[in-house]
Amino acid sequence: MMIYEMRTYTLKPTRMADWLALYKSHALAVQQEHLGKLVGFFTTEFGTANQVVHIWAYESLDERAARRAKMAADPRWSEFSAKNKELDAIVELKSSILKPTDFSPLA
Image 1 (tube, rainbow, N blue to C red):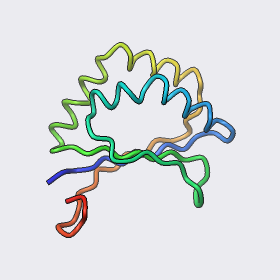
Image 2 (cartoon, one colour):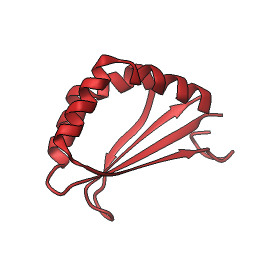
Image 3 (tube, rainbow, N blue to C red):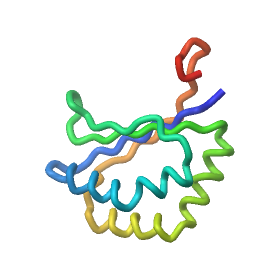
């Protein structure tokens, strides 16, 4: 059974477009290469404003840890991390590991 990691970033007001552009140009390809299956990438329309949510699928927690370690060692990820820090758009990051029920379409 797959597990899913849901990462929710809360951004500073007015920084959404800048952060999404940076992510798309410097992080998306690196994450897709190393993390594997992107289930979805979203921005909030209602509710808490200025949030980005993305969900990744993994075979196990061990696979997730191995994939994230490889990504962390990639110089392109270091470049994104430096640019991300410089942009200073992120207020908060929450990461949840989700396990689908036996009747979930994602099980």
